[in-house]
Image 1 (cartoon, rainbow, N blue to C red):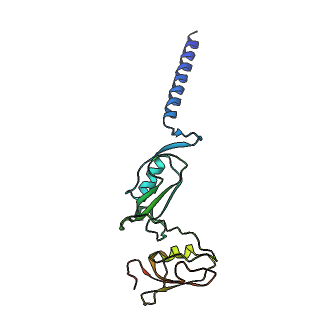
Image 2 (image 1 turned 180 degrees about the vertical axis):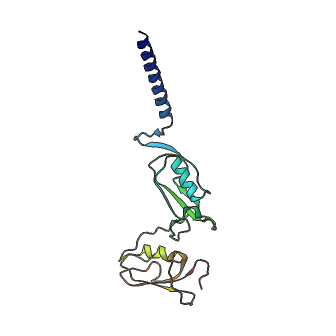
Image 3 (image 1 turned 120 degrees about the horizontal axis):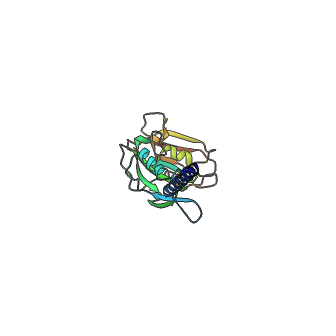
Length: 199
């Protein structure tokens, strides 16, 4: 008789323990939106280091993260700790956790631009018009042109330097001019490094 009482007591204690654990587990889960996806509060991450911003977004429950060069130069954020966040899309607030969070970033030594420039340009197809590339990076210009476009890039300073890291060079002049019809003709760009002024 005594064994049954002890077993009943142990079973009741185990049941209470499981119920208590189950209740605390549901308290940590994110809320669910009407469509069935989880929601969480996306904090304001502007001004943070890019790596810290990504870590905080992930801690809040957001996993679909991206970043871009806010200066529009098309540079990759290869070492996140060397970049800082200037803008974020979407804005802070309650969002579905499967929302893509995109950070506009610059290098730590650079100032944030007044307006974020993702550098994305619609590709120019043959038969389209030539975009205006003055002040943009050579890399952005190359990526905006149709992949079949013949492109020549010349050092506008007259020093004859080779344009190797295209995201470090800004376009000073272009031929054909912005707005001209593109129909398969070669494109020529003249560029200098971003730290230099166009001649």
